[in-house]
Length: 592
Image (cartoon, rainbow, N blue to C red; front, side, top):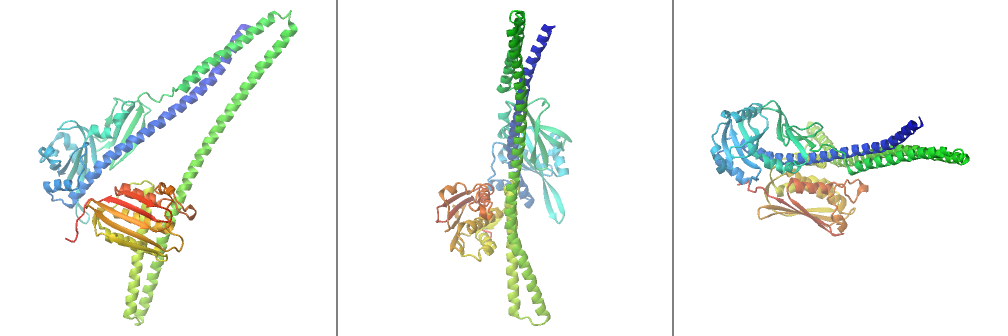
């Protein structure tokens, strides 16, 4: 019986020590698995952005072609090719061809020489193309299908979008379709799928395929994706794609730390078991000498019992301390998460407050001037009813009302621009009107719109050396850039009541680049500030409520929206100079 008891205690002690290490190893395993899942999520987000960008970039080009056909429904093949050449359509290696399909027959192709044999082919009579052609025609929605074996070799992804002609009020006519053929392998390689194929199993699904009326697989590198995969949705026009992925080796958590804990657990539990077993052996040896060394044996037994009790107490204290540390760590994690959320909400609150403050000024001006126009019209009506109105008074009243209405219109336009600026900082994608403007006239309109902000200051605005250039661009972006620069000079560039000067110049460089120069003679910037002014939320006047977004928005508009460059030159007390260069896509004289 004593031997059985000793064996049970040794086994029990060994299991307790081993279980503590196994628990720690399981915690490490779970942490490692979660870390791998987070890493896979990042990989998914990366390839999703890459694939969305690659597809939407080509769709944007096709949308331009669709718009051109909508405006010119009776165009010829020469018109079609001339337009594409004129617009300098970038035929990268991923794009195989563009095809304009009138009703169901291929009418125009680009590039022409490589694809001219396809002209006149009625896709509605080709079995492999029939369902897709008729689906776009009937549903009038964008369709993407693939992979498809191409006649000219290789595998392709086909995008079809309807071309609808507006023939009058509430009347639309189906003209045909615009087809884009993309090289399947190049497209997914461009989105880095080939780099991930080595260690990640991937599938791209299209939900509610209009042709098969089911979910179709667009891309896969595995016969059957195992369970436990992660997924993310893609944003494509009128189409829902989903990317699914899982590591080829699964979410293993067997890290070096995991193996180290298992190894230490085995070693430590073995030592503990041997130690307890050794204690029992010593106790048995001592009992054999009980007659000869009774007193000494009792003392030794008491000592050994105290050691065992002390070890158990220390082990319990250690377990309690570990529990407290785990609870403290959990509380710390929760507190950290709460602080991050509060900081984000505080930052967003400051941004919203700043935008709301800037909106209140033009809205307040609009309300004030609306009241002024109303009172002016009421007084004019009273004089008219009393037959006491004079021609001079009538002209004066009309001029005042017109001036007020112009000011109201300009301030309401500024409200619209401020809202778009806020949307820019939230990374919302939007399409602004792309049209031809006269830079000289448009800059003058901008100066008129901001005049109320400067009329009670000592700052003079000079628009000089501005060439009369007609350009295709985004007028809203131009307006926002110069409005932000002017307000930035007003708020940051001059001391209170300081006499100052702002100059704006514009010229064409070799009919390819529009150069815009903005300078003031204000307080300027330190050298240490030049590298920071375009960063979001950086401002030199936070105490005055500035959010630090003005020049960051200017930089984004120049670099991303207008595809240009911006350069800042400044030194302390010598003002600032912004040199902006943007490409001129098309220039011509609208008066001819």
